[in-house]
Length: 264
Image (cartoon, rainbow, N blue to C red):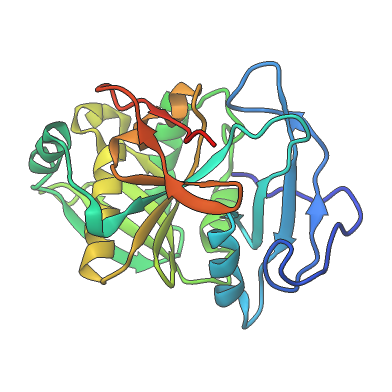
């Protein structure tokens, strides 16, 4: 994600309203990247300095995500389609298809490294963006912008690098590690090996890493019921959504992994 910039005055500084004592800003509306003919608006706050880790963990529990040194969440006036979701690690049971993906990628090695950008990563990132998101906001990012996306963080941010048996880098996951588990920030992979389903495999790896660390959750960002781009997240059950300020199970309604929101 390119770095957003606040465009309005401070919205709130009262502790407990949106999280820790922070200055919050509202960005100008822009076209929604997920639902056609809609505009999105974000609530934004800076997370930096020695308290950044604890501040961001608390904000994440309230549905915020991170981009660079900012935490944000949707603040759309007429739409609440974006639902923050997280996998309940201790209850996770992979489906038959997920187990098949895990076996297919068992030959890959995974190394967790500091959040430092490399030319090898950027080359893979470029191939992924051109193949999957050539008309998106990340198209045309230069190396310095990629490095800023990876390195501009005052929280516990890491990179997981996935390599094949020849040592070739085939996937990268940028993640933040919170007090209750990892939060997936951004992932990309080699489009030439799409048959591996590496996007799904990286989520499975995050769940395994969280389980090994005794962590409770894996945060997957936002889920939108009618967005095909978000549908993959429903494969990881049980999945909780933040609804009306409370984390609660999202209800499976069919065998194709579709979910529905709980009724009041």
